[in-house]
Image 1 (cartoon, one colour):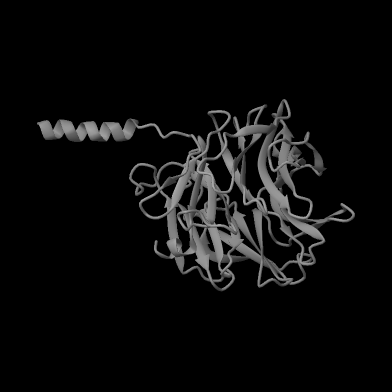
Image 2 (spheres, rainbow, N blue to C red):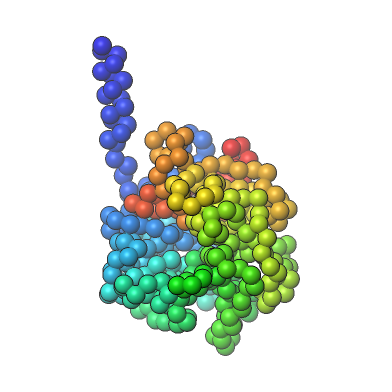
Amino acid sequence: MLLTILLFSIQLTKLTAVIPYDGIIHRSTDGSSYAFLSPPTPTFNHAASIEQLTPSGTLAIAWFTDGEASPNCSIAVSLLEYGSQQFTPGVIITDRVNYTNLNPVLFWDNDTQILHLYHSSQLNGKGEATSQIWHTQSKDRGVTWSIATPFYTVPGAFARNRIIPTLNKLGFIFPCYNSSPDIDYPFILRLSSSTSNLTRIEMKDTDNLIQPTVIRLNNSARLRTFLRDEHGEWIYYLDSNDDGLTWTTPKATSLPNNNAGIEAHTLKSGAIIMAFNNRNGLHKPRTPLTVALSYDNGMTWPYLRDVQIHDDDNSTSIGEYSYPSVLQSFWSGTDDNDIHLAYSYKRQTIKYVRFNEKWIKQG
């Protein structure tokens, strides 16, 4: 009887324990490290974007907060200074009143030392087909921000994943997608640094493939874009051999997709890391959240490791751990980890996890 009571007490403590959303980094027994960010509002924190500021090494994470359909859904930012063991509390940096502001994308311009943030913005209640992409920037490494202004005003435009420089370093390649009542599809914006001119580049035969994530292959003009599948089947890819000016038609990878966000990134070793929900099908829990490694430019993925399945026993597929953003920093923490992952944790906060390439292979 006493043993039964003791076991019940332990289980009750486990179920009722409150995870502190305080931004403090903790070490896991498996060698990774993690933190739960401190959001500015307690509801609906989602869609992280992580960026590294150089040469300081500061990490910035942005996300949207206070409800996807809320008239005051805003963009928040939290910072981790190099060497620190705690993220700053999330602060709202743009909040157009009566507008829903979603899907922030951070971009650090090392030449100008300016941190840029792009996000979608739509009048509340008018639907995603009215969305535009807006822009704000910080000249003091994410501490203060300019008033957001329109960047790309074609209705239905959305951002989601990382911006990369053009091969000649004279511009930027910005992966975007369009939401409409009829069909959703991806496109690329090329921005010239010298003239600020925008060129829109379409991708053929990509209906219902959205939220492109672009990587450069072998430091060449060859790009590979991976895409989320609104049919909930596979992650798709397509290629460009001319630095994003033209694109092949899409093909399915071997990685599943459940119509949820993905992001790819090229590591120092040349490997490609993909962060995604390792399942297909629609209307299923967005779990597990998995990272995979490819050593042949994304054709095969021999190493996979689940980062999160469930927050209690890590074996039950319930909950939501989604919309990942991933990068590798030039520095390693005291835990010898240099790959940084941020993702939505049950839409209550943003969770940060840090690990290394070896950790993935050991999964």
